[in-house]
Length: 54
Image (cartoon, rainbow, N blue to C red; front, side):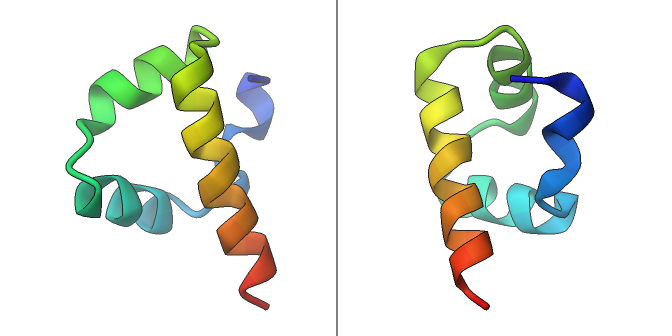
């Protein structure tokens, strides 16, 4: 992931979704910034749902 684009989803939305999925936010962000495939896919799915909602 590109660190300068990590804020595309508002933090309250991202944290709310991760909390609802029972995913630790700290671990998720660490793995996301270190290009772990699972976290990248989760972020991509959340992003798609956030963008498509309009």
